[in-house]
Image (cartoon, rainbow, N blue to C red; front, side):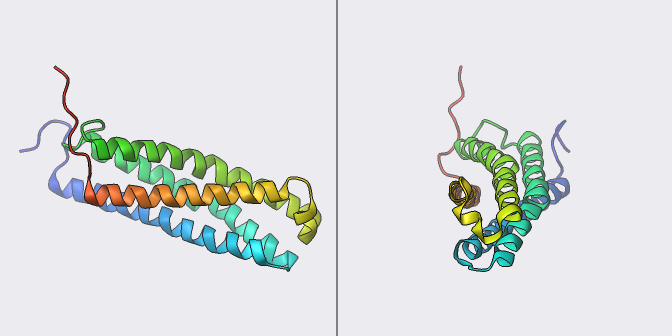
Length: 171
């Protein structure tokens, strides 16, 4: 019989499936961001540059938000409603810190950097590379993409290996 506020095995599997699906979408979107940012970095075609930024901005306003929120919500539900808990294991605490980083970079950073880049490209086309601040914005976007990707990979690794063990409880 289930303990109060605990999920049955079937419920836990459904929430875990949703959590893995949202996390997989996050990782897939990051792969697309890498491809588009690489393309934007090397193109000599203004339309391609604009398209790359437009698609990245579209992803930042849709898939990034949905998958980040979905992964966070399902992760909290799984932690609270299973024996894992929110603060019982070091690997979960590490994932929570990385999740906060992913929220800031994903929900705010990627959105802002793509929006500012797109605005400059809309105004100047390929000459945006010569405009004040565009290169700095593009480098900031790259730093955000790298941080987000490494954070997601680290969260996947933590979920599989679960290092650090259980925290010692205070008496």
